[in-house]
Length: 172
Image (cartoon, rainbow, N blue to C red; front, side):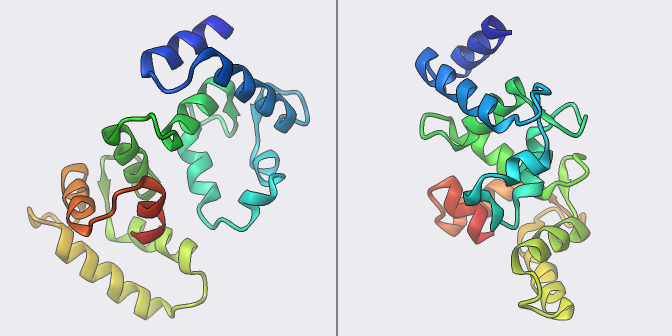
């Protein structure tokens, strides 16, 4: 397993061997049941994640094989999206996938509503939130198909002046 992950990480040019070893140790500490994968509860054991409304979406995005857990390879691939060494395209694809709940390559009105609802909770009435979603879709949807493609998403990010991925996740 170590070689597979190291090879993958080196191919991505995101983490060096020392960083991978530190991440492996962190992963093993988080893996309280020693199952080889992290559950939602294990992720939520980290105090810094407990208040983040998008944790579930991030975990779902990390879980590429959709087995309900995040193994070490998925963990490394996911964490690399937050690395300053990662490339912009990869970060944009990750951010897009947070909103593209069904993974079909588009952000629909319903998906945008669901993710924004996670972010705002009960601070906005559903009608107010729906108005924001509708305006956002109208603004971003340049081809008029009623949904946001990855390319349209990138244009919105570029036009918004958002420079850092972490800022983007919080802004959009």
